Image 1 (cartoon, helix red, strand yellow):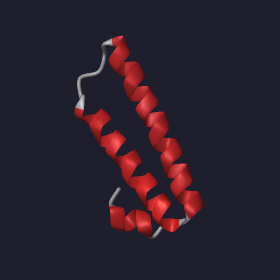
Image 2 (spheres, helix red, strand yellow; image 1 turned 180 degrees about the vertical axis):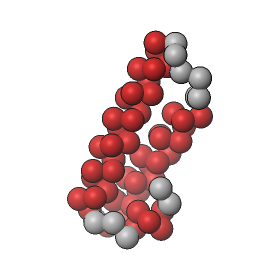
Image 3 (spheres, rainbow, N blue to C red; image 1 turned 30 degrees about the vertical axis):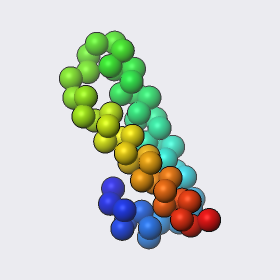
Image 4 (cartoon, helix red, strand yellow; image 1 turned 135 degrees about the vertical axis):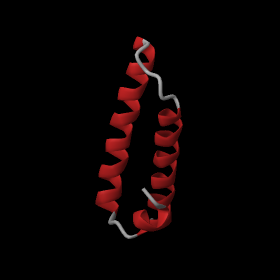
Length: 61
């Protein structure tokens, strides 16, 4: 999601988005540990999306 889009969301929506990204990150880690994961760039994308969302949350406080 784009930073501009994140800034237009409410604090509750941002918290939900972080929760969804954390779940996705967990699933990707489980797939990687099971050896069935080939798209390693997805882990980096999710990690950066979490950081981006948390940054916008901090700006709203």
